[in-house]
Length: 222
Image 1 (cartoon, one colour):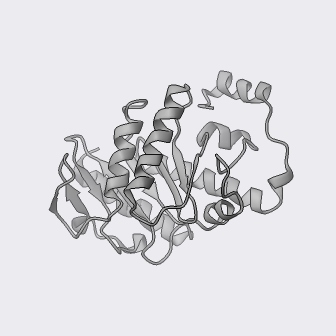
Image 2 (cartoon, helix red, strand yellow):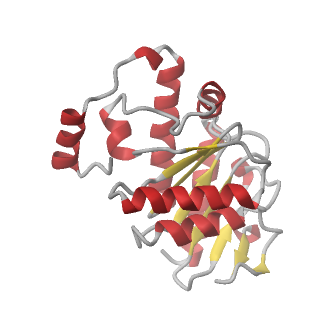
């Protein structure tokens, strides 16, 4: 993906998320890691529904801004995610962070748990995987980035690389090889959280035999 294509795709994905209520006001951000090792990220306090490709923040490989509006403060977290996740999947090239309603609401109910969700549906297992629940930190706190990076490394070493982490009371971070693929992870995560809040909290999780079947047939990373 060229830089021009990445700029257009960030804006397309941002508008789609905003139109469907996954983000609101100026909450949330999207970044893309470019082929030269630099980054594009949505500006601070920007509404994802009304992004301008030319005004996206452009940073070099060291995280220093070289053009565009002032970068979101979450670039430090995104950079840690890329560094950790690419050790297990070198294709990782996009991170999306939102304050999605159902995921945040579920984090309030499950505070203190290790993971946001149990494996209640096959598509959650296949498309999302484990989602560690990171204890509350103020927005932009470097300690949250440290916790997320450690979780990525821990799950990767277990042979189940993750594609999402949930910041308690704040929102999910999802990553994948492209903005469209990262958005699909976010959508499946938010839908599963909605199911839990609608009454599936008492549902029996898929057992190990069924999860192993998903591994064998679909390469599920669980």
